[in-house]
Length: 430
Image (cartoon, rainbow, N blue to C red; front, side):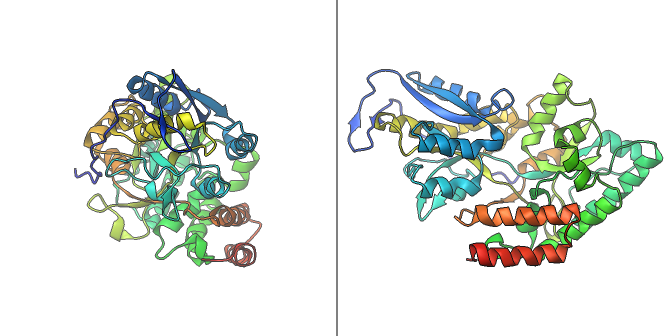
């Protein structure tokens, strides 16, 4: 099998810690240095502690303390702390759409001088007007999860990496019908409520799609397909999912659906949940996301999908004596050593080479069949959120479009027309 993985470049890490003051000049550390780092759901999101520990091993005089925030209100809470002068030294960029908000608010330090390894992905998402305001440490991409046991029960052939969206829809319909015949309550697939589950693929795969253009007709076939699958009972409908606040992990993890489109972050979560008993014991695999057409489908091609990086920026108000230590942490987080540590816990690092990939697939419970390896390692991942001060506003409008269509309160055509009018009047186009 061919891997299309960017090779990691050499990364130089300074042997001694020199602390640079913001006002110019350098000062030596007068003693141990403590940096604070923002994170969320620390008990179930181990990556922050893994990186903090790995960095401390390289720099014993520097300790990284984690500051936990509610994941649902993360950006609001961090912004409030920054305004109050109580923000963390290192700010995890949870969502790319808010990078410009932090930058325009003068809350992020220019980190253009942080050296990154060759082949790391996601760097462009943190570049604004020629300067860099964060560095990526992980890069998730959306893929197709499938339950091999349910496919077997339905007598349906597993995905082979060649599916277009028409193939996917046909398989979902066939699975739903065949499983119903066996008496299984499982749906053909579960589609979560997020706008990403429809718009992310449409934005990445449709020719010349650009959410900042304010033109959204290309969304129509993706929504027509989702509505048809919902109406045919091949997947649980949006309103039922919303009313019952269904969780995607519980729906797939308890075998209520044979397929699910989700980001690669779920690989490690599902493996851990099966090990703990929080998810049922069943065989599963990962396939590339369905494609717009056959030109990017199949294991001899590179499938197109979407996903934003997650990165670290530095608080512009950081104590000057800590600045260099914080930059050293960013350098470490992007390094091959950090990437390998993340891969060992089934986190998709922004830097991926053959050695790092092997660490990923050696993680307990991660599927190691050839198609799963291909799907996780090989893809063209386009950003879900272009770096622009208009992105958050446009995505909010597109979120309303998604809710209107999937809930049945608006037709696809009417929702698209409304969204286009709103972007033109409320945001403006590029």
